[in-house]
Image (cartoon, rainbow, N blue to C red):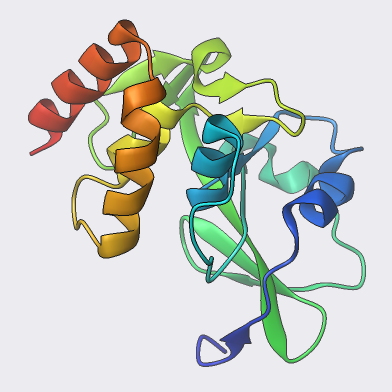
Length: 164
């Protein structure tokens, strides 16, 4: 695999345009999702993440792209640099399932904010940032948490405690 290649991340608007005709749910994830929630840029990004349900993977058509399977994600490029990471979300019926702890679930209708573009709800994105906390995760948490409603904060705190 070509993991050693550098990243030249696709702009969020270009990623959204790429997925505009995808016939299944999709959303912006990662640090860009936090920025869409807070309404402003927070930091530099090493990649651009779009997330789809793993069960919808076979419907994905990326003509002209080189796609490498990394397990829970697909790394995508058109040339010598990675441009897009497509995360594959676990689900069970109408529920999203946290891949690190399947006891943690949330209705699919509650994990995505409508945008545009649609983006992962901050409490769900921040849950992924609780295991191995990096400086960028602290920046995202500090910006998003004060803007989250009480229910979202309670859900995040309960899930983070359960997952540790």
